[in-house]
Image (cartoon, rainbow, N blue to C red; front, side, top):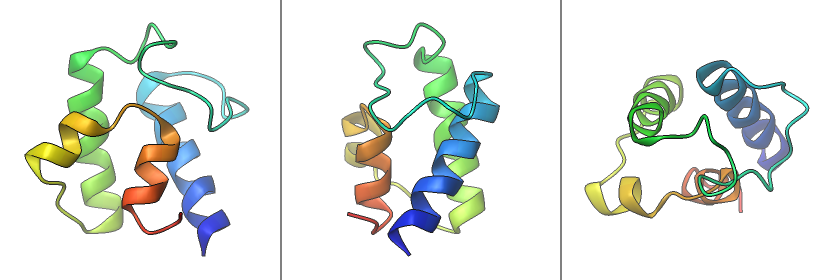
Length: 76
């Protein structure tokens, strides 16, 4: 399950940020120029739709990396 979540999250992030899928889970908002505030909100919406979840405002604000997303989605 954890690897499925990682794989799906990685693919979605790649699509939203328009970066190669090969980008690893060490990707963060601080180190990725494409991951600005608008792309962050777009990513949240895509993740909510794909995983049929709703992130709280606190979760949305606290997501700083792919690892954060995977952890919230239950893949930690």
